[in-house]
Image (tube, protein in one colour):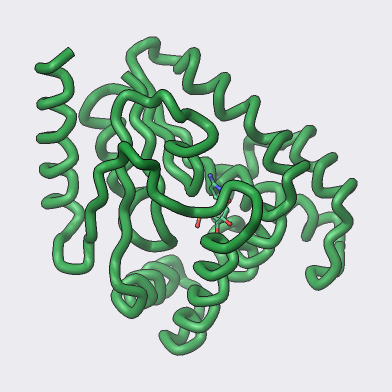
Length: 214
Ligand code: C5P
């Protein structure tokens, strides 16, 4: 079974995806990490973050260094912001699409796959068996992200994190190519008032219902 999870930043989609994959013994692909890795490679190449050379971004995507997707260096707000700029380029998205579909078609465990991102249920895997769309109030999300950055040893101020998140949300939702939106057949869950365990339990109940039906 293929599970697609889309949603906004710090909505809890990544934690849900990881926990679901662990529980079901499925493979997990964090597709946001792919965009972040491209952003980090560009930064390492010394680009001016205010001017993105599209050809260079496409080259980084095509030569994707997957080890970067595991690097803690991709977890900064600067990388997130550059990733969201790069993610509005159709050419970069096209380059990463094949990799994402190939992962879903042949997950290493042979069991199933969970992919999370912004366009998984709409563009990458429109035929996914189960789709979730996760969102929450932006102040709550910014608070979660601030705490997460602080826990990771980075400096973070709620007000700045909130401002950066508003810009990123707006860009991700309004870009012309593959904007963040819920697929028509996605199950939408607002996590403003529920924790990660409650979200997992809810998602598992949808999974079990789907499994019984098929
Ligand atoms: O999910 P995460 O916050 O790590 O994603 C970083 C950025 O990558 C997002 O703000 C978004 O612009 C982009 N992204 C995307 N499509 C995906 C996953 C991430 O456009 N499937």
